[in-house]
Image (cartoon, rainbow, N blue to C red; front, side, top):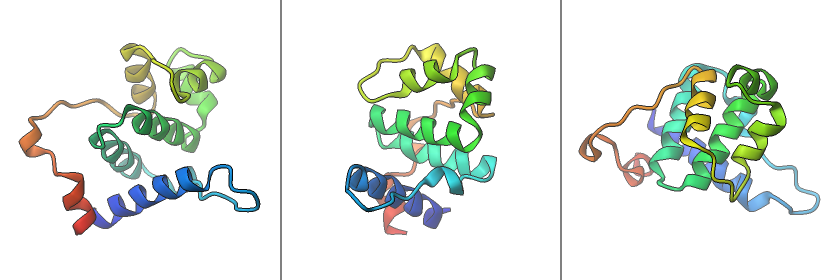
Length: 125
């Protein structure tokens, strides 16, 4: 699992760096999220970063992997509404995030910080 988390972290960083670079086709992690376990690991790693923008981007990528239109409809949103909720700088309501996660077959779980592995440990493994 540590290698998978490292690859996810690298993919998101590469995606961020390559956005807008002419002539370079960015890596699309959505094409590699082919199981519920992969999506769960991807989203878990993103939320552990503590960066809300990073987490919203991860939800958007996971929803694209599972068909954004279907996920949005299941969450009670339009496709455009889902994208708008997850765009950089947006402040989606908690219910929107929970509904999108539910549509992805995911659930939030709150655990004491001591039980959550540190991102630096995942990267070192």
